[in-house]
Length: 513
Length: 99
Image (cartoon, rainbow over all chains, first blue to last red; front, side, top):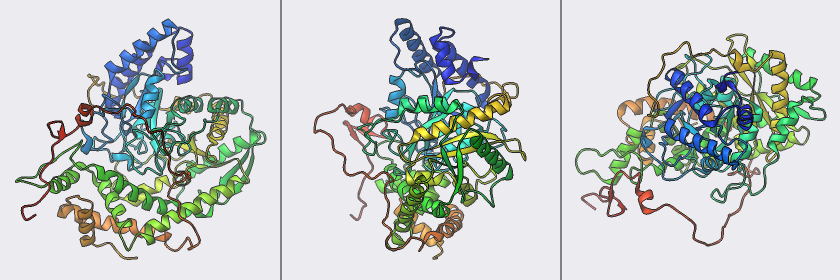
């Protein structure tokens, strides 16, 4: 098997066995990026030189017997919403073009402390607002399964990088589904941890009560390995949970044995029906049957308030975002546009925010400003916060009778680029099934469930667990992954187009792509 | 459900400190009306007895020991500034002529 197609766990084993080096692995991924990223556009910035230097340092540590972690030497890509000292961090926005953070996000510092070479920064919808990566100010990412289609969003770059073998691992962030929905439409694995389970320090906030950093990988075990490495308490994030993570790797390994005896699974009644693509539902139903065969007990569970989750989300998110994005004032960092004449600071601010923010960001800032206006606050934001309570209660009631809840991750497979770009509501509907977890703070994973019959494109299977019980997502996810792989005769990504032969090579590395 | 008018969008953009031109106002106002209409279903669903949730994981104030910790140097803090003067952020005038 070629080096780039190995999982992160396999790469770690190959390194341990002395079969390869971190420099060799890192170079192989950089070569792959050079070969296919002109067509995929998963990366906004590739740091070839830095990654190779970190890889050489890892190889030196291995020779000296001073390894820092199980994944020491395995390279990774990082979503461009996470601050990386010395590397550009744009959040997919013109307002941060060229910004080089003077500090690392905690998760980035933990990657460095664990010895993972950082390949570069991945593309995203501007400030993580979107479900298609088309709202990036630097052009969309293309789905490796069909380059005319969206890779999901907002973390389409991270998902596409992993799906097209441009990286074995990536970090994403999930505010309403931005890790899980791209995972579903690209045939990869994505995890949104329990809120507070992974530090948000250095994550440029979209909606701080909903955002979580999480793993983007090709296998459930790789996500568990990465999650353990980035997770755990951080005194720099006051919403960080001060208790140890469950043993996620052990849960993934237990699940992979294929035995789910005694596990109670609830199928969410409300997340199915009209508007759900038949091929997506067919793969979901088959997956549920496989879980039953593995010994799980499956029941249907109603979460009646989930039908209001999207409305609550699109009031809470813009309200928080409009406040968070007020910091882009053209004074301390980022873009400054100076109108003619002798403009005041406020006029500079207005002109900068008009020039620096894209359409979707403006829509959400204005919507948030409206929802927080006196006279509308109780009717909108106040109601949305009450709905959040009701959705959390639905989860509590459900988890009293089942261990995990399941649904398809997204209602459809990847749609065509441009198809929903100017229809915000159609775009928002992609996150129907993923939003409730963010509102309640519970963890969720998306695992590939197969290809839809209509279009041959990947669909995802979502598993949700109670807060702090992230290990259950890994156990059930790994069991499903194992059952499906044995049915398919290998991982789903084996069926993806090779890409390499299809596209023009990119000649240069290291610059902003 | 009050429809959101073009004038209201202009007012909100003003509050949010974004200069929207006429074309943007024409484009955004009807879209915002559609979005508001779709989230309006939420009103009245939760009764007065339902407490609001602002954060999924209930937390009270988190404190740390009052000790000095490493932080950015002045050079680092100013490294992304559009304009710097005498180790300070340099900004345009704050007041108008009449002020």
